[in-house]
Length: 288
Length: 288
Image (cartoon, rainbow over all chains, first blue to last red; front, side):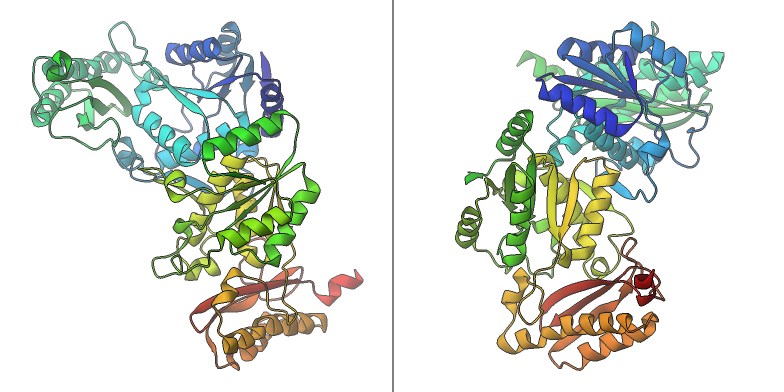
């Protein structure tokens, strides 16, 4: 596995590979890699001639009160995992190369960025859209891979790529879960033992709501009540930021499940913020 | 000259040329081409294997009270001019291909976009930065050519390209002027005969200020008074939006000419808004 730290060299390497007709699959990450990341890496390897992963904890997508400083970092472990998977290139930029003196440009996907997580994390998705635009321009991949766990992020990046004519295919891969259903996340490492147990309520409430839809419930008020009740029954859930059904395209809250819908949740367990989602289709759709 | 209207086809064509090792020079324009544009085209042809020009009057860089609808359009004349210069490819997108349903992404170069013209044209440079990002992603040039007349635009685009790692060299070409010094601009066609005569005051005031600097004036208050007096002496100059000396990098107004500086002017003559600029160095610098 080749390790590259300088954006200009990274660009040079992938442009040379492209000139030789190679396809490039890219997995941008913030490190602290888990099975979810590894599933993206395997997809990227399977579908492209060259696989590139990046690890960069982007300061611009963390709010001032957020966990940038304590965000888990494990460069050695991550490098080993990626090498073991046979990743061809690991891009490892540092802040001084990513944000040069006088840096001031922002890429903002209006509307989509202010909903759901964006409401609770102002500026977060502009930070994400900006760094992803940069990484895409540096790596110039044919395809880029993201996990469905960060559903809003995938919608925003798809829109961004379309709006700015980036000519990159965005592949969204299924959420990878622990045995008890908890979505894999680098932030799970923050959880104390009791909190880890409490966190299973997130997937339970999504599962229950999804089963309610399968049994014919279409009223979102009812689903919301069901989800909130499950979450609020857990004392360690300190805040339910959102838990409802949304349009999978616009991310706006809907009133009835009439076509494919997104069930999405964000909670705080102690001081750890966790998110998860499932897509559902109404029963009526299945028959015909 | 090949004419391409669809972004995906344009991208395909230039990527194929790049794969064959060809360099691509790009001149983005809003049409109504004059000698200034032609000088850019000649530079692009001279320095690259393939020259691409685009004509697109971008609605997103015009304010609601601005001249989008009456902006001069001369597709036939423009096409003829570019073909005569031996341009290889003319990219001619339409709105429906440039701004798809649901378009919402904005590229904003903060700080630089709010000064000078940006103060009088809110949103203008975000419209410019967004469309230029799109055009760069569609044409994927090695070099792109802009005129110094739109000085602030060149500073913003250089910053944008650097900040977003676009890997494109921005070439700024000298302002081309009419015999009496008026900077060539598509908007000059709006001027009635008397207004056209009055417009020469713009270059005169820049020239006089630049000569004052050459004679040792370094106090910007003094230069500003000189420039404003010349402009305000012309009855058809209906508004002086700005006329002063600025940092060529940050575009902030300066107090003294201590190193290279930008003299820049924006006025309204009747209802036509015109801009121009000159760079100057203090006399002290010349001796060393």
